[in-house]
Length: 146
Image: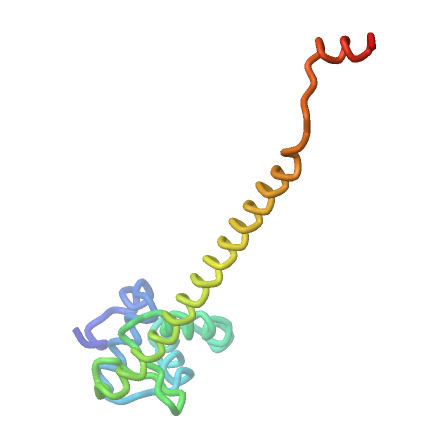
């Protein structure tokens, strides 16, 4: 469905990222975020102040939505329209984040090993008490008589 087919009420009830998707699909070109959100504002009746207040949330929304891609020049487009080469770069970024997660897991495991080592040290202190002699009360009273 094209933008012109939606009523203003329908557009007001849609999410901004869905409207952005329709705009980018119809225009068939990349757009700067301010231009894209200004167009959404016109369609939904947002004033300039509201646009300025909400553009940060809109940026976050686009960042999290897998349908969109931010290009090197800072403009946004639909991910489906870009070459596999750019997609590979995204995969490399995901691999880097996976490496970071693995490093964090390794650090946690090392900390756990340190804790285990610490527990072993406590057990070693029990060996210091191995020469300790326990005296029964009966033996104590016999020693007192001598």
